[in-house]
Length: 387
Image (cartoon, rainbow, N blue to C red):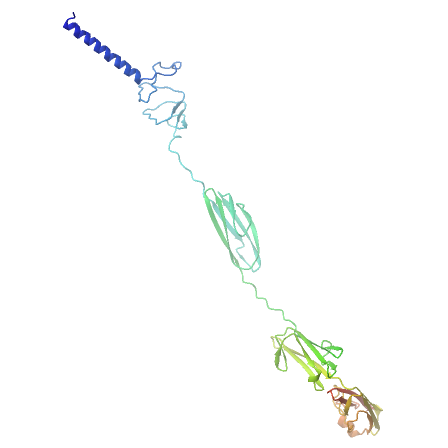
């Protein structure tokens, strides 16, 4: 039998053994030993690999140290290379791994100029652009996308503002310039010569005022005359006081003409200068032949006039001469005869009364006209002068 004291001692020994076993097991559970031996010259005491913070009072020397989480260093350390979150330093005074500084891309700078900036009407100017911190430029007045360059704008007729935009990593910037263009010069119009030409066609013939004024066209009673005219430099044209086209044409019927008609056109320019042209339209007459013998006479001599006309003639009468005659000599009635002869004495009174004005020696112009029932007449003339 055990005594009371022996039993109490056994209980104490058993209890202390149990406590020791539990403590050792707990310590063993909280510790994870190193996975490799300490390097040569290293301290054999292992560094705990658990997540529990550890403090080493002595110095710790490493050739390379990487910290993958938060690092806390309360004292200066000496290191050949220390890397923290991918940033490495060679000494603790190296601030390379301080707070990173963000440097934004540079802003583009653009310049646009014109030479010259003021030009005469229809002249030219050279546009030049430069830029920095850019990769391309664009403008609606050039196809180039270069960051610098120049181009010539020609035949400028109005003041124009030009703009260009350049782009880079730092954004876009624009520049502009204005080229002033003078007003268009006032050009006085070159005066256009005032001219007028008339042409008439009919009866198988064509006449024109281009060769001479007052040309004459003969047409049959049942025929017509086509008249045209053209002008240059005219501001207006008229016929008989009524305005007409400056270039035009019209038709005259023979049945509307009583023996003859004078067609006249007048044109004026803006300066008040005028020009007129005339065309005679005659209905064809029956034809006539008229003569006098002798042509050369002395005062007191007698002359004989003879005439004949076409088959359509219905009347012949005197006192007609060519258009340039200043006077005509009426030597007596013909009685309407379409053919015949008549004698007359050349007296001084006849000569004084009928000689052409200013003629020296005297000169007599005598004419005859024969007409038909269609309004057509034929003319002929002859002359008498002293021997």
